[in-house]
Image 1 (cartoon, rainbow, N blue to C red):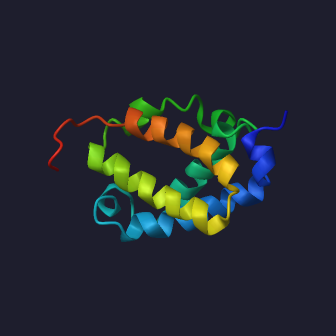
Image 2: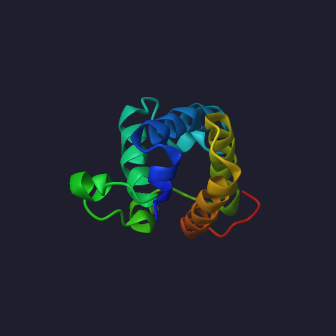
Length: 126
């Protein structure tokens, strides 16, 4: 059985997702303050992570160690609205790249679970 990574076209598609995602992040008022102006390093980390996350080669672990997502995100205030904004940007990116509906649903369920796991601030009116 093929992984999501393989079914979407591997490295080139993951790169397209990352390239479609970050302009949306930069434009989003809920997210842009959380990211550096130069997103080169951030985009590369996201590429490495998503490749591994969707069943591709373990690039993130090879280059940066275990993802430890929650621990790596603790320095940043992540509210429920932050997770929702991140997911909205990712949904648009997946749509732009043209990920097949069935595969997108599989990806989405994993992304939603992960985004909500990153929440570290419980104030909901932020």
